[in-house]
Amino acid sequence: MTIAEPPIRALHQDRRVTGDGVHMVARSYQKGVRLDAHMHREAQLVYAASGTMQVTTPKGRWLVPPDRAVWVPALLPHAIDVLADIEMRTLYFDQAWLAREKRSGSLDHEFVVRVSPLVHQAILALFDAACGRERTDLLIRLVMLELHQAEDSATFIPLPQEPRCRRAADIVLADPTRDHEIDALARTVGTSARTLSRLFAAETQLSFKSWCQRARIAAAIERLSTDANVSVKQVASDLGYASVPAFSHAFRQVTGKTPTAFAEKT
Image (cartoon, rainbow, N blue to C red; front, side):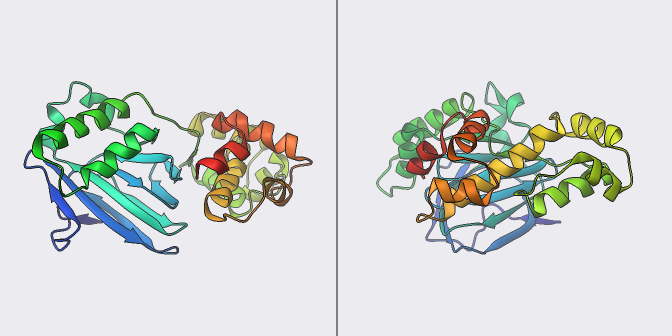
C-alpha cells in the first residue's frame, strides 16, 4: 500500500500551507482517471468543486457528486475513480492539528458530507492567493464546524466482507438495473436465501431489498451527475422503473430530494 507523502511535494503551484498543520492542494483530473489504493499520513477532506468522483474504502463505495465532500482519516486505504472531469480541492490535516479539535473522536472514520453553498464558497476562498492567515484560519474553522453537522450517507454503498455476501453484492453492482431475486442470487453464491438475507443485514445494516435500492439510486446519481443531457425520464427507464413517479419516490427515499432537484444542483 502506497503512503503518499504530505502533501505531494512536487505540486508547487497548486499547494498552499497555512503553517499550522493544514495543507491545501488543488488538482484537475479528467474523466476515467483512477487513483489506485493509497493512504496519507494526514486526514483529508476531498471536494470536487465540479465533476463527480467515486471513493472506495474497505467499508464501501462513496459516490461524491459536486454537492458532497468525503472525509478520509489518516492512514485509511482509499482509491478514487473520476467519473466526470473534476476540479479537486483537498484539505490535509496533520494529526497534531486534529488532536486539538474538540470533536476529533468523530473524525476517526470515513464519511460523506453535504456541502452547503456557504461551505462551497469557503473552500474556494481558501485557495485564493490573497487569503491572509487570519482569514484562512477562520475559513478552516467554518469548514470544520459545518463538517460535524452535515454527515450524509445517502450516496454510500456499504460493501459486505463475508465472501458469499460480497460475491452477491458484486453481482448486483455489475448490473444494478436488474431486479435481482434473492433466491436466485443465493443459489448462485452457494447459500440459502435466508442466510444471504441475514448476512446482508448484519454486514451492511440494510435489508437486501434496501441495499439493492441504494445501489440502483447510486447508479442514478452517477448518471445524473455525469451526463448533462440525460433526462430524468430516460434514467428512470434505463434503471427499470415503471414510471417517473416511482423512480422519484425511490430517489427521494434515499437522498431526501427528487431526481430533478438533484440534477439542478449538479
